[in-house]
Image (cartoon, rainbow, N blue to C red; front, side):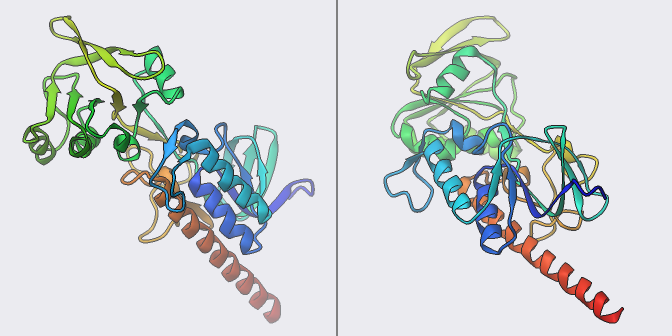
Length: 324
């Protein structure tokens, strides 16, 4: 082991609600955590405007402001927060080896992964512009649906996630236009039946989005029937994209167990991965809830489990020393 390598007790990859919560707990447990933020510190909440469903913020809060609060709290307890990305890992032995920005090597007794997931987008200029401006484009109906109560909205997608979010929006909104690019949905039969039986959901088959309309906020969408090439405009104030998420876990594929979509697999009611001393939290391992509050919860779990892992490791090492 080279003497110039930095050796830390707890290394946290990612800086969303899961990562910052893990950092707060790890720092309070005197694990002296080092966090590498990733390219987008704060995670998906940096793209979110109003957050009204996180406990403690009675009047709501802007996503970036909320993440700044998380960051300050983690720093208050001594977390070493560094901007950068982990470019490679080696989990073959403890301490685990991680390379940051392809140049700095860190050895870590425990690793907490909170790299999150990225929403898939259609890639339209108008969609991204209005999303970034907080102008009515969203990838989370549960997060943002409340803002469109009694209004007309669009949801794009034909899978289970799109069906679930369409049903959620239907409880709040006046009308939900569901754009499905094929002549059938990919969602499970029971979800399709629920959608079809909901009177204020209108399905537009073989339909794709040409442009999201609006300057500062969504006022509608220009759509095209991909069978007839006929274009039309649907007047709405909200545009929801539900075509899936991609967990940011590619760097771990040679080391950690993951499902077919790339979500990290954890053991039972824990954040333990198949590698000792490596824990996964937040949206990198949660494809069901994907909420800030649940991510924070698993971040807490990961830090507590890392602390217990280290305590057990230190105990076993002390036992060996006493025997020798």
